[in-house]
Image 1 (spheres, rainbow, N blue to C red):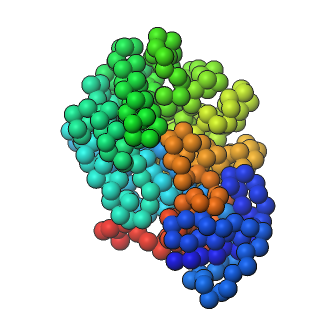
Image 2: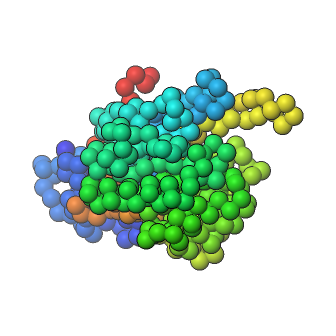
Image 3: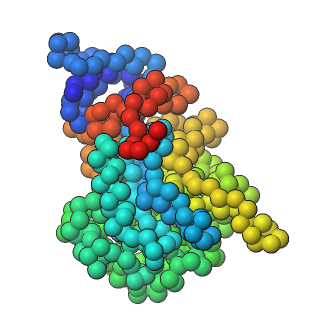
Length: 388
Ligand SMILES: [Zn+2]
C-alpha cells in the first residue's frame, strides 16, 4: 500500500511547516516540500491542506488486559478496546498489570499485546505488577525482559501506597539493577515503571535507591505525579533530575484532589523541568471508584479512557498556551525516547508510518497505524474483534 499525503502542516513534533509525506508498507519513506511521483504508483492520495500531521500518539501506561478489583469482583475492569485506542489517536500502547497481581497474570497482558498487534497497532508491555516479589512469566522478571521481545521493563511497581508491598530500598535497587542489565541484554530500556501512591514524600524510595547505588534516575519512570498537591509539589523538584509521568484519565473524577494534567504540564515547565522529562499517560482501563464519604460504600464505578491524553493535549495548547510542538512531545517523542521505541514518536523518513491528521481544533481527521488507514474524516475504518 502506497499513500501520498499532500500539503500537510507537519508537527514532527517539531514544527516543519507544509510538506508532502509518502507512506509505503509500514514506513514513512519520503518527506519533502513537494514529492513528484507518477500517480500510477500510488494507491491513495490525500489532500491534507489545512490539516496538521503528527506522529501517532504513544500511551505508555494502560491496563490493556483489565485491572481494578479493589472494590470486589464487581469492580474488575474490562480489556482495552481497539476502537477506544484509535479514537484517542493512539497507535502505540504499553500495557501493564496493576493492583491485582494475585488473580490476574502477566501472561494475559502478553496475550493482549499480541492481540493488539494482530489488529494492526503497536504494543509492548511491562512485566510484573504492584507486588514485590514481582510476578513474571519465566519465574524471574529480568528473564522476561531479556527473553520476551514484547516486554520492555517491569512495573508498575507500587511504592508510597497502602496497596504496595512496601519494597525496601535494597529490594528496589535490586529490581532496577536487574531490569537495567536485562534491558542491556535485550536492547530495550529495562526501565522500572513506578506507581506512586498518596503517602507523604512519595519519591523518597527512588531517591534512596539512587543515592545508595550506582543507578541513575533514568532507570525509574514514576507515574501519577499529579495525584494531589503535595505529590505534585515534590514532582516539581524530582522532575529536574528524573522522568515525571502525568496521569490524565483520573482527573475528571477526582477534580478536588488532582492537578489538571494540562495545567500540571505548564507548571512543570515553569518550574524549569525539562520538557524531555515529561510524559502524559492515560492509565486507561484502570478503575475509578467513588465512595460515599460517610458510609464508605462504593457509589460509582468507571474506567479511564485513552482519549484523556488528547483532551489534555488540546487544553495544554488552547488554555495553557503551550505551543503544539512542545505539548505534543509528552505523547510522542518523549515516551519513544524514554522507552527506546526507536521507530516511533517522530515524523521522519525511515520511521514507522504511525500518523495522525488533525483538524485545526485538534480533533482527529485521519489515523494511520503502520501504514494502514484506520480512521478517515473522524470515523473508524476498523474495529477490534467482536466489537459491534
Ligand atoms: Zn498506578
